[in-house]
Length: 514
Ligand code: NAP
Image (cartoon, rainbow, N blue to C red; front, top):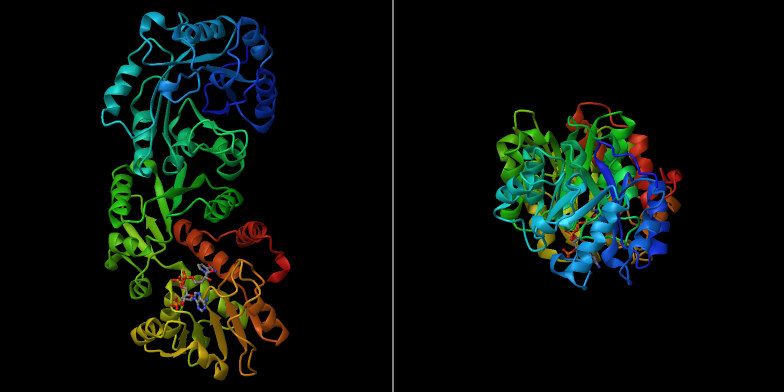
């Protein structure tokens, strides 16, 4: 049989979990077509344990490198048969031309396949990052096997940083993976640290371990095939963070600008302690080349406190929230708030005025939450006469008083007297798409800005267009804040059209809603 060529680059390894040999073989070719450099044949998933002939048929003419694994239940796999049968399957796989076999470190050396040059010696911890990680890796690294593998559950992204420590320290080709959503960066950035490989699923729902991305995500979204040791790293901190559009926007922007940079999601649990623990761990590792962070709910206040008011934009300090951290090569931090900047720029562009042109304008801000706070602070700074209308009167009053604005209840909206209306409530947001915070738009109103971006064309925006007002959507604000982040981090003009296109496509909005 022909053996696939062994390559030295970081492989995208597609883990195949089909339950029949025929399906697994089909999936192997599909994975190669999708861009995988290797496949892991999880023989423990097969309903009928494979004999010699089945293994030979499965491996025959493999289009990419093959890793044969037959994980027992004790190590998180599905194989329930006798250990001697399992070891026979692995030994057969080596004889029949598997490029690699994965053998658990718990198997005593005497029982491991003789061809150690093809053995990946593996350790798994599905509960935590092992406290004795360095000792474990020293033992694996000193073994006769050709490749080390460690996979452990991540309690937070700081555990994924431990995986990079391992990659930097080991002398042999190594796989080091932090499992779970919090460990995702260990899978995305493996190539930056010269890992032997990183695992991916053929499609969502086909993962063989928690937190595995798909091949398409690794290749198209995170561009892992283009990563180099010098890749600059950026990311978004949030909880939840899985559905954030920021990785798609920023990675597309880096690609369009021809930059060696990658933007990743970082799931950090809500407490300030968790935020600080990650930031400390990150800054201890200057070799990560981490240059910037977007920060979203619930960590914007924590970001301000961590970076320190003295290192933050004055208006961000007034707002009490930092959504952008810039990390200089010497590790010093700067904090900004591009939410307010993105909103102001959207408003001014929609009205064809400068920020200074906002002075003395009468603005009605509907809502008193986080977004309203950023916008009210910015409008007050540029000299607007602001009235905050909020469902919960007290909350609206508190916000208004802090920034020298007036306040009123939603029932006062019937007597609205303003040139600009900005909706910062969630009224009209999916699935409540038939609602609008205003029954009708009074003639005094010249511009309506709805911060909601899902949907882009809210009922309020349609009302504004019908009334002949300038209509500014939340999509513009969203794109602007990402553009401002890109420019703050890179000091280069952002590829705005590319970024806008990504957001519009994700939201299913047409570009004609400009
Ligand atoms: P938040 O802190 O939870 O505040 C929500 C606000 O909406 C509060 O003032 C709340 O009033 C009000 N509200 C909620 N349900 C209401 C209802 N049924 N009737 C009247 N008022 C209601 O949320 P946020 O983070 O500020 O987000 C607010 C809006 O901004 C969201 O619609 C979101 O889509 C949008 N947003 C846009 C962007 C962008 O880039 N375009 C980014 C983030 C958020 P109470 O005080 O009475 O509860």
